[in-house]
Amino acid sequence: MTTLTRQRAALTLAVLTTLLGVTGIAALSLGSEPVPISRLLAIVAGWYAPVSPTDMSETIVLQIRGPRIVLAGLVGATLGLTGAVLQSILRNPLAEPHLIGVSSGAALGVIVAGLWPIQHALAGATATWLLAFAGGMTTLVALYRLSMVSGRIRPETLVLAGVVLNGTLSAVIMFLTSYVDPARIFGRVVWLMGNLGSVESRVLWLIGPVLGTGMTWLCLQGRPLTIMTLGAETAQSLGVHAERVIRSSLIVAAMMIGLVVSLSGMIGFVGILTPHILRRLIGTDYRLLLPASVLGGAMFLIIADTVARVALAPTELPVGVITAICGGPFFLWLLAQRRKVVAG
Image: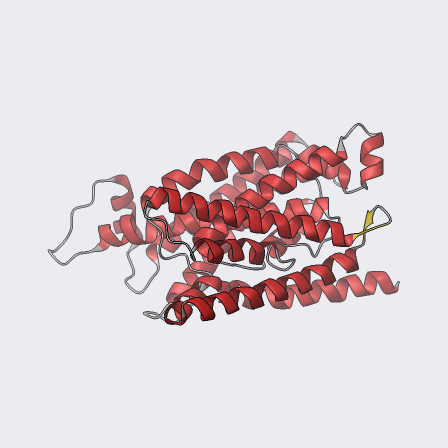
């Protein structure tokens, strides 16, 4: 393991932050109606004057693409971070919120919340988030219990249980969607495949601090999570209260996953692809890997959403399709690598 120094951590995070900023600027510029970089910078700086009455550049940047890119960044950061946390706690490099069914559990909560319309918007959003959290948390607890054999989590059992839970929950979601309201099935299917285009700016002001608090708390668990990769018993002998770290981290991760799923649907593979690439580049110390996963996850999902917007413009693809195209082959490659390690 490469020794982590403050200089190396600061340099790594500075590089990732710069790349994230460049990615955000490029994403603001690209789309079915491109906005030149010079005009974009003027709009962001506040000194832009429309060149004609039909010039919609400012509206496109500030009211359409801007909120969408911020949401993509928040969702990607959350999925990247929680993927890294789950891989440490479950001691399985294949653990990811979407693959092991946690996102499906949260999505089921969102679907159930939609069965009882609530008039007040804030109350409705709160109920949706709480049910999404309950669905994700229940799935995580079930997965944790099913994977525990003789006091230890068996990686192969965890993956198998996650796949079964994910398939079962997805089937229930489709049944409820098609049985209760067939007229809305197309919109629900698009949402389930990942949709970042329907958020309002005021929603971002509400969820930003919540997700930011959760990210900060999880990033502060870097040291105990690094030690816990050695095993819960070893971590206990080194002074880490493993059970407390596991429970609190799972609860916070489930809350954050429930919140982003309620807003953007199920977007897979961000939580497995981002931490693995970063782990190969910067090492396995979670004190650096966790904040790097925040920045890397945000960058990856902003790029994926930009591709989803411009690939078949003016038609938009669900962003989950792009992440699946990238993440599916990567997941199979990881399985092949793991098979080689097990074989010898």
